[in-house]
Length: 372
Image (cartoon, rainbow, N blue to C red; front, side, top):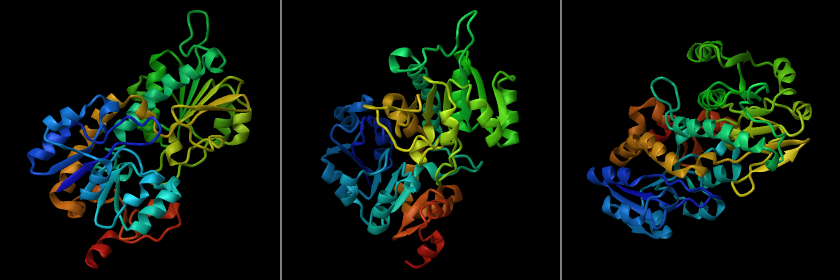
């Protein structure tokens, strides 16, 4: 099979979907890897490294036109929609529940699109979302600490405080991978951390893992409203796989927050879980102010640390890329969790949560396969 790796064109997206090491493994398995020129430069991988690994450097048009499988990091932008076609598989972070134009482009082109973020493993977790969630969760605290600095328009508070001065209060919405990594990072810096969660088992796990150093709170509007007015940093980390994120923090809650406090909505790529984060920002202009609170809603946070992110992503995606390269879409029939990654096929939505989020027509994949 011919696997294509185009250069990412989203603002400040310096990740690449495949490392030279990954390209070498695919080549060793008998597949051809086409990499767009300069695709890996942002992550510190030169064209020459890819050549040495056995990949072929091509132009953007050639990568898209000649490949059977396109492997990316982020969704297609509008200028790339014309590359979508029915006889090609696309494997990337889609996040189409919050991106109707891209969803329509996939449906109209009848592309078989497989989303990293909806694939599940045998434990029910999200193995291809996990590495980037770990990066984003840890980054959220770094970003929040920067926003709280006076020079950034913040209140001028240090997360960990110093002897004689109280630390910052950090509220994390959601105790999943993003939320736990954020909470652990903030706790490590000495902040007073509360994780708002609804899963009693997860709260017990967090309490046990951290020896009670990270406090957990059952998430109800009443509890959150009472706590958020005293928060210095709020990190949104709510996820419903494939679906839009629910709005946990309302505009009225944000109005009660202290002037100079900060919000980092990591869930923004799924629409955001904080009502006042009503649009995405980018790494050039990452923040905006509402009601005296500084908001950060960059949809590709891990793109700011591309070397770490690219290696971590390839470590997770490569086994799945190999399966697709060896067996095509038939590989999905052998793994129920892998099958959940297919979001669109033959002009239909093939993931229920995505279809519901977009009010689109859902078709069972097995039915579509039988129609061939």
